[in-house]
Image 1 (cartoon, rainbow, N blue to C red):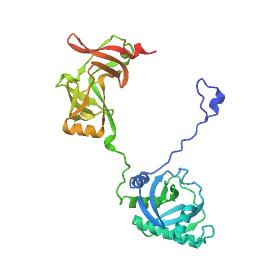
Image 2: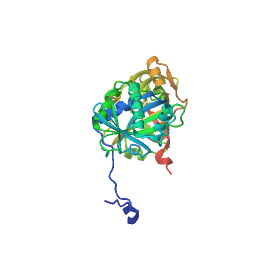
Image 3: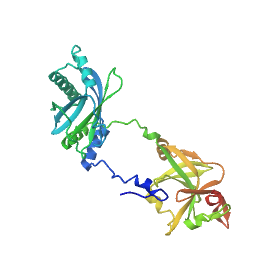
Image 4: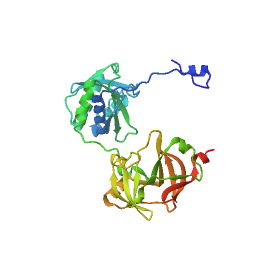
Amino acid sequence: MNLTLPGKPASLASATPWQPLQLPRLTGLQAQACSAVAQRAWHVPIDIGVQWQARLWPVPATDPRVARQIEGRIIRLRWEGGVFYMRVPDALLAACAQALVPDIPLPGMPAAFANTILEGALLSAQQALGLSGASLAMVEAFPERDPAVPGFLLELQGAGLEGAMTLPIQADADGVAALARHAFLRPCVGNHVDIGAVPVTLRAIVGETNLSAEQVATLQHGDAVLIDRYHPAAGQMLPLRAASGWSLMAVCDDHALSSASLWQADRLCDDLLDAAPGEGRMTFELGLVRLSLRQLLTAIQTHVAVAVLPGDAMLRVFFDGRPVGQGVLADIDGRLAVVLSRAAAASAD
């Protein structure tokens, strides 16, 4: 099937046929197993003649690193009812052999001796991970990959060695389940992300009204828009609204905002205007309040000042979240309104 693009020569469009979307496919249990391994990434020291730091993480079966061809031996592990295939680089075997038996060069190493070194390495890894019962055998090649079963990468960082070695691992479904069972016994590993430093942007909303898109399209410089709901009118409470819908109700006192209470989205919706079909919400905002999550949580708990708003009365005007202009507050026959000093329709080139 070919896609013909408007305004493009047919020959160009026919050169780009549709391609089927190849997505990794996982069952729910496999996804949980991968999450368990990823969140509890085994990052442990293993002594195999050389001190290694080992880390394991899951990747889709279609990841090219799983099938990457590297110089080395292929071993098959049977453990906890699962079968694993791993390609061991010659460089890893050489590093282990050099530490254990420095007089035997790798090119002339008998297969049986190499197998012994690998068995010793496996035993050390089992002890470091608190596992037992695995058996090892040399094989000639990886089996055909099952695209429905995720793969794994084992990264080894050796003490005193430059760079890390990455070992591709192919497992069957029982092997994935076995890894997950043992991963759940380990604590989660932090990813060094400072959650408290996550930025939170809040909008200081003075008021709002409902308008149709047709009405918004005709707004010009100097137009006055009546505010149907003016927030600071009652107790000087000003909502600082987050993108996800919840609001921090703040006390507005001489342009300083102090947190008062946190409103969930469903509570706040009861107090918002009901838009008729074809209408959208126009909001009038004093500006943005940017806090870290740590500052926000502290403000909620202690009611400390969270921001100082600009001293001028300039408001930013949004229609359903899209900026459409700026304006200033005005009193029209006892009702608050915003007189536009700049409108999107008037300023558009």
